Image (cartoon, rainbow, N blue to C red; front, side, top):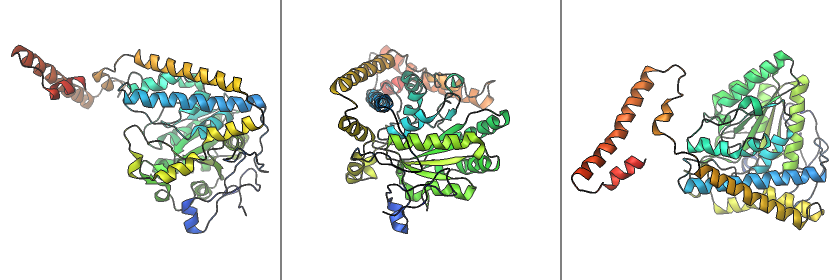
Length: 404
C-alpha cells in the first residue's frame, strides 16, 4: 500500500510503514497512516520513522503488564456487578495503548489521566486498590500525585488537558528535563477545553504530549460524529505535529510515545498521539454497548487483541516458555484474590461523606443540600421504626431506600 506522512504538520521522524483505513477515512477517500511494529498476526515489521529494539526481558515485561492489568480490570467489573463498587470504567482492549505509553515515560515526567487509565496507573506503581477505593466511594483517589507523578483521575471530560498544559508550561519555565502526557478520549476531543489546551500548548511551546485513546465510541456516538478528519490531523491546525499509532500494538505505542515525549522535552513543543484502538467492553458498567454497535464489529477488533498478538510473537520466537506463562497465571490469580479481598474489606461509603470535600471552607448551598439529604435519609429510618412499632414488616420500597 502507499502511505502518507506519519503526522500532520511535520513529525520528528517520517517513514514508510503499514497502513490501515478507518471507516470515516474510506468515506472521504483518505488513507491515514497507522504506525505499526507488530501486526495482529504477531509478525514484527519495521518502520523507519519509529524503531524499537526491546530485549526479551522488556518484551516479557510488557506482556506481563498487560495480562495483570486485564486481570484486575476483570475483577473490578465482577466486583461492581456484585455491588461492591458503584461504577467501573473498563479498559478491556486498550491495554497496549496504556502500557506502551506508560512505560515510555520517565520518572520525572508527569501524567494527567482521565478515569480509564488503569494500565497507566499500573506503570506508575499506583496500587489497584486505590483505584477501586475511589470507585467504591471510600477515597478521593488514595494516592499522592507528587509521589507517583500521576495525577488523580479526572471525571470532567477534557479538563485534564488544560491542567496538563499548565503544568507543562511551569516545567518549561523551571527548565526541567521533563515532559507531561495528558490522556483523553475521542469523545473528549470535541470539548472546548481540549481545543484551548491545544492553543495554549502551541503558543507557549509547552512540553506536553496529548495522548488520545481513540477507542471508536464516545459512549454511544462513533468517532465520525466527533471529527470530520482523523483526530491526529487536527494538531496541524494548532501548529504542532500529530501521529496515529496502532493502539493495539504495544511496541508501536511505546516507540511513538517515547519519541513524542523526547520531542517535547527537547524544546520542540507539544505533539498529539492518536492511539487507534477499540473499547471491547461497555463505556462503564452502566452502559449496554449492544444497543449501538454490532457483534461483527466487536469480533473484528477481537482479532486484533493486543495481548494475543504479543503472546503469539513471544511464543513463536521462543521468548516465553510454559513456565513463564504458568508463573504469570499464578501471579494473576494472586492479584485477583488480593483485589477481591481488599475491596471486600473496605468500609461501606458513608452517604454524607460526599459533602465533606466540595469546598475547603464550607459553602452555604452545600450546607443546605447536606441538611436536605440528611432529612431524606432519616425519613427511611422513621418509616422503619413506625412499621416495627405497629407490628408490620417494612415495605420493600423503604428497605431499598434505607439500603441505598
